[in-house]
Length: 529
Image (cartoon, rainbow, N blue to C red; front, side, top):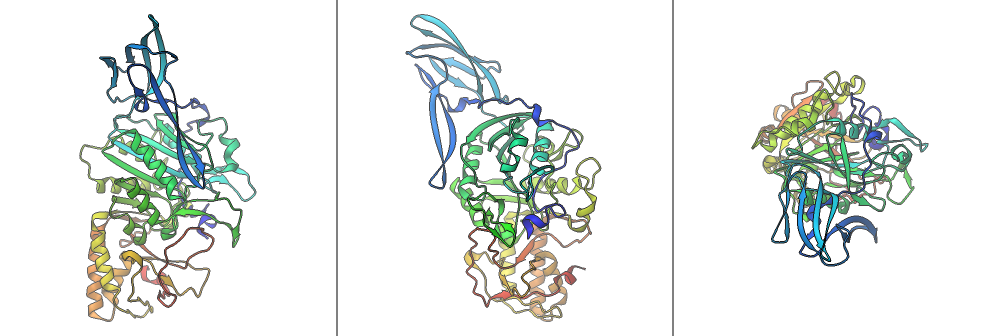
């Protein structure tokens, strides 16, 4: 289905082509850098905590180990503490610091121990004061990491590697932008990554070609679990209070069935020739944000089929704007930038003050769309000419869209294409998806809500239905603030997914719709010609 068949042509996920030749193998491999924010500062000793995430009873937990910052055994008197950046000082035996622009720094501590003056020098991390955070949640434990069915790593299909190259080759001002990456790799790629800084799953900070691993993960992650996303979000929160957060959900996407699918979920079961996978459902995304009490400026879906009303509705309370595609996404996906084109990273690192979240989502959509058109960015003519589309939505308008759609769905609508709508809505007002009469088990129907409402407003036989469809179209027109399709369809922006539950995905999909409630769709492709 979507996860494997369309990898080469339709992508169904993220990854990006880079025109530069940044060599990740040459990035220095550092041990974990001490986060000075976690240092317990007192009169006698300085201790810090190293956080490792481990797997316990099928859930990730964080274990904190306390160790001494400086090599001392007895009580001491701190005389001086300073850093190259000048952000650390001692006053009245208390060490304080001012957040600075430098991620890494050298801390020099002078102290008295048994009446002898001693000096310790350590590399520490000073918490950033970046205005914006790009948090990238990379679900690479699948064929996007270059794994084929024979268990062989193919670097030409390793979209994780290609995107890491882009992130490490773009120069930017760290006072303006932080890039924090959660990375999960496929086992087939272990040897390929073994001598690089990205040799294991973990949380990384990236800046101007420099990479530091700031969290170890001591078990096999599952990016399809809500708890795993929550762990990453808490890591993001721990580094700074950002003015803007762009959360990039990178991986395979399948509308309401989930995003960031992970193939390594403890089973080798195959369904219809595909490995069972676990993905984050829209409800799990909502729960993760709620549990972290976290509001997001923009969610970027570097994944297929995620600009669906059933997905976007669940994000209405926590996310200001969303960028992504209602159709398939080429394997090379989001464009972070290179030495010639600044891409998403370059744009985010130069945001003017008080930039509106909606404008950020629009610009990200433009960057991703144009990257496949512009020579030297992500030129990929063959497949994108069929389906390339990008859109951005203003989440403050989605309730109005829901109300207009709900009003329209109270009618059975019949017209020449025999498009029938039921009078029922689904669980928790998430009325944007229904079961379909699955007479053809090979088909999955994606319907564009914008073009559907426009069509009904012009062609429905009932004037009342035409008026309600016109109202929906007008609300959608305000909601979808950017839409671009390579075939110049003006009214394509967000989708409605019509499909059955697919057993190959081991996600729990909320399905409170009885078997006799369905959309029956025929010849939808004729509606957009």
